[in-house]
Length: 125
Image 1 (cartoon, rainbow, N blue to C red):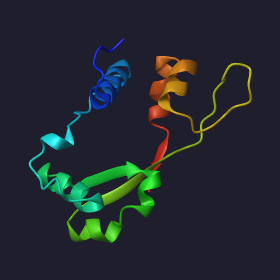
Image 2 (cartoon, one colour):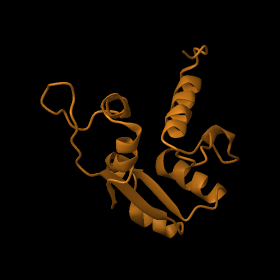
Image 3 (tube, rainbow, N blue to C red):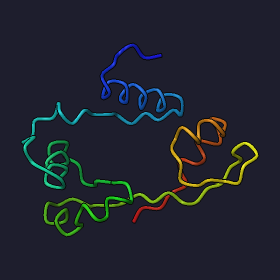
Image 4 (cartoon, rainbow, N blue to C red):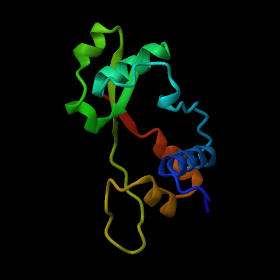
């Protein structure tokens, strides 16, 4: 149980717990704490985050292909990739498999070791 009713705090806490459970040691940075122009929108804001963090590559979920333009990132000396999860299948009770559900479903039906294997099952586009 998490005692804070702030949605951001709850999600941040949840992500940190899942990362800890799966031994993911990636540093998580709260974007509002970065010294950038927060009035920027969309990819301009993402590019400003990347520049502030001295990043060379930005990886977004596959659904962002309609939001972000690779040539705009290249003009800013940044690589833009999209992460596409490869199809996986696992037992979900005795039901037929329902794909592309959330991490919560994966946590319910897979061991920690199985989850760690699934983490590497993706393609960068």
